[in-house]
Image (tube, rainbow, N blue to C red; front, side, top):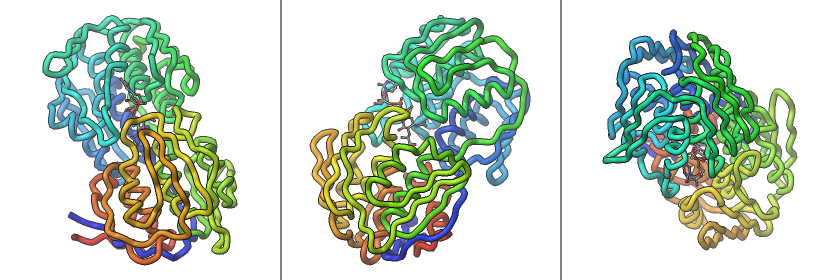
Length: 418
Ligand code: EPZ
């Protein structure tokens, strides 16, 4: 088991190209099941969740090659319709294979995805979407779906990202016209739409709350570049805000980060948003300030995945900041670890009050989930002394070489066997 030794106190300086988005490549890998020929994906992040998704594709009979940040999936030999419990548990978002698998084979047999460290991860909206497209779904020791999806009206009770993606994939692989209302608007859904349409699909409306799909069109193979990861960018900007210095990030669309950039601007950082890059600067003598309430919300609101990293930066600031986590029941597990570093944070249910300290101090801390791990690394960079961060298996799910990224910006981070 490895740990990170992070020595705080040095400002970050430099420029970095942000790697491809985990939450875009995962549904796009599942979508490869709908193609009739090989698909080449570039700018893919090298993450353990991606490795798990490739394992599921291979289990279903696809040929999969990965070389660096390029993945080639040839689904022509795929015949399976069942995903093992072990594979479903290996990755929280394995449920995204349900829609394309059902559309491709006319049946799908999966177990429930693992209960997540963020609280329960229900899939009722996924299943109701599948039913709305005329398929038969039973939940008897797992999930069993039968039938060929036909067009329908999918009304999502919540703008669930995963349920929206599953509905799109099922509709693309099925027949007829499908309308999805109250759809999630996250940028990763736009990337999925672009990918599917590049293979010959007809998906319209991604980014809005209503998405229309014309099913039954044959999808060719093709080549597609995965968008940059806006949450990795938010984490690196949080690290720069915590440590001070000046960091420029390329490969991400600043509009996908607008709410996070606005928070750091209000906190006293210089923020520059250009088509080709985003930049954040905080001078040594410019302490962060507390900001008005940060309430997480579906896109284009403040992203729940950025809550922990931004909280970590604001834990050392002048003033207070109130956080309201509206998306998940248990997304404050990083708070106890930040308190070990000297933070003053009180939580009550989904509310957290951060009273800014002048500075945090190094400590032995453990990542309990993916974004909480990124948050602790960001906090450690601004802290006095050295922090020893464990639980790196969580971090490796969504950050490709976090220590390398931070070192390239001048941080003193070393990954060692514990
Ligand atoms: C996606 O998860 C992301 N994961 C999450 O990122 C992100 O936090 C989340 O969207 C919200 O933005 C991927 O894209 C792989 P949801 P997802 O369905 O699709 C409830 C990360 O750190 N809900 O939009 O699982 C659910 O409980 C990860 O990269 C139901 O009630 O999220 C939650 O409260 C963490 N029934 C809310 O909706 C359902 O059937 C939003 O969940 C589905 C969801």
